[in-house]
Length: 279
Image 1 (cartoon, rainbow, N blue to C red):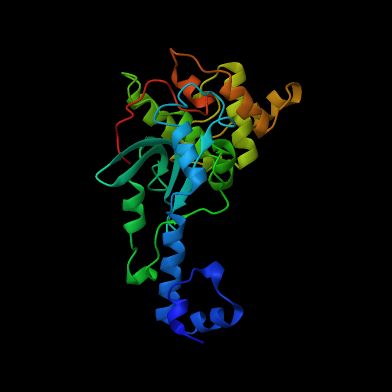
Image 2: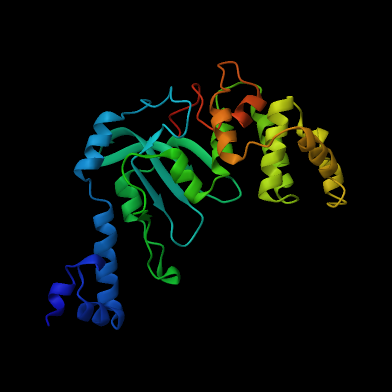
């Protein structure tokens, strides 16, 4: 069997005998791996149709993440980094640029903006310490999948992050950063179900997080900083709708003159952001 033919194949094209050869040869492995990743970056007819149908800012008015369409999800296989394409931005200098959301560092969260070009992502090599891995496309995500489904599969909390973006709303930046930090601290104290119950309670009662969570106390006594009894008492007389119903409620609560609570309730992008920032 000619190794020359294997150098030209992707992982899906290998026969069982060729696969064994690849597994026993680093040179063949890297050749096939690179062919496979390169294929992930090819503009398919479905992608081209998406680019035609969803140009830059075409999904601004969509208020439900279940209705917002996604072209692709790229990720770093060795770190918590993701890029989700929602709109076609521009083609310049022989490079395709897209708009969407990205998570560059786990402790920072998700942001909206102009993404690195497809060609730039394709060129990234993570180096010998990480086995020369590259940025890959998530093949479980199909062109036209909803942002909601993609985010739920990657990081459901990312929906909260994206709903809190407000780059161009004056005087809210510091408040949002502070509030976001407080909610992040709360997640260290409660489980997912209780966190969702707190969010629902705050939304329904127009309450502030400080009503049930003492940030200063968190620094000294995590067992006493959260008023779990108050939340449990509340749900003795109120129904908890569950996470899916919460998302539907969040998407319907958007307004043009949004407060921070509106952003927390609204797990979608806002109308007034700086769309020119590259992530």
